[in-house]
Image (cartoon, rainbow, N blue to C red):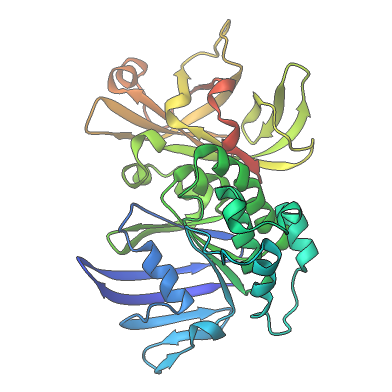
Length: 361
């Protein structure tokens, strides 16, 4: 399933010019508020008619200005999950879920029982939306969208209204949709942590323009993405595999550049995972460190350097087959004589990696 989009549309303050392809998995539309992300999703959903362009889903035309084609929203077979759950307050959860099936039109897909098990909402069926927490409402909204058996799910910042605890609680359910059901998703977010945890493909937008597309691990570790991501959010994603769990509460993970010890994950040994490491949590050393409390030391080669406007320098490192970003002061960079091709060691404290930044691979 591939979404192909090439559209132009005049909006207040700027013109939206978006062109990209969204393959299977989760494609995240990332950017600051007002970048045009929701307008793109609304164009895909049929809620906004672009001034010009073409949108296709798996080869079928949703919109083509040149050919005068516009498929109505109710015929596009898409599921839409908004920031607010938009559940029917007078209906119980069970009735809200079944409502989604009215749009399935005999298409194959998950049953109510399967959706309830996948999203852990079986115990909520007899309750009304007003009795649910924010995270529970969003899980029910996702379930309702799934039961319409869509060709693609559209999610417009579905976690934006939730606090950090409830966000952490719902992320594993979105991973299940990605990995177990294989439903392609177009996911709008301005949270780097969400994108790093969920996305397989990232589309970066600024002022209505697509400035970068590619695999999540490539885009998020690109030095040219530091400004749109924000210096404090800069980091990298390392594909990993769980090796074992140690009795002291640490999990051992294998990455292409070596081994990592991190706070214990609930994934089983052998499971694929992905780890987000912030650039500000990486220390550089010219010699292999000895006698440190930090448990993770990865051999690395300097790939590229980028100086900021302030006193900082971002260093892109090659660790095995992956890239790691490190944020240091210009004074430290000068003292270490950092330069492309230089070999050194990246030091990462185990406790600096937030458990929410370790997800299913």
